[in-house]
Length: 374
Image (tube, rainbow, N blue to C red; front, top):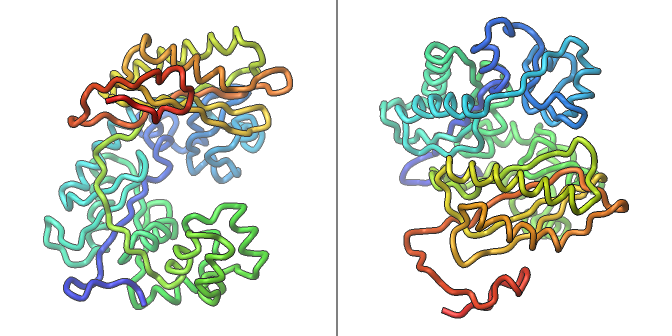
């Protein structure tokens, strides 16, 4: 039985997803690109497609594809470097439209968000009508298109937004949910990636109906705690609220090398430039955090992370560079383990309640920063 609050009835959730957002902004701002296959991303030997226009998608180009592959698929592909400050500005304009209807907005990324319109500012009872009005305003005011999914929970609203893309919407009503889910391929479920999909197929789960037929105990045995999530999703149950998030959790940057790094001197140079970029981003975002994380991706695409928490916020090169070098010492890189990508991020945002604390010997303890002296 789908989730319902007896005193209030079903929730009314909308998932809004901008269509090919980065590419669409570029085509809008540069009319010469309109109607042409474009990809936003780095046009280099290790570049990756961030977003592809629908004209490019007809050739099989999609996000996260290697740019070299995309250009093979679509020889006339136009590669645009991207203007992420501009995309953020346009995203803010989209969210300003959302706020005319509700303050319960949960951003998922720069180009999509959940809206809880159960009690909305316009007093509109039909959530599909609100979705239509929002999409119309985005089209008329911003000259972009968006797709929307409407249902009584986040799980179904998210899935629904993919059904009539681009520039469309789809609603799953409570009385339709169980039948809709029964015919849904399990790869459409949240949290079901390639490895989980293989495990599901191995035990005979291919659709929502198959998933619903498996007991809760067996799903927990095979998938652990997330087995209960799959169990609930298959029954149309998702009690997660739409949670407005205004506090940024981290700021980071990363760089994919033109050629793999194997030497310490190369790594130190790359690390130095990353620190400078990170400091600039921290300043621009006015972010103050205390945990530094070093991300390394090897040539075989294996990823490792090394982290350290400081006794004070990390905002300057003098704060961050020494810690980055310490973290680098914990990483194995050589001719046998060449590095493809290096990233740095600051997280663990400081709060107003934070007081200066002296952490005895925290630099010497490596990753064991729990021994403190207050």
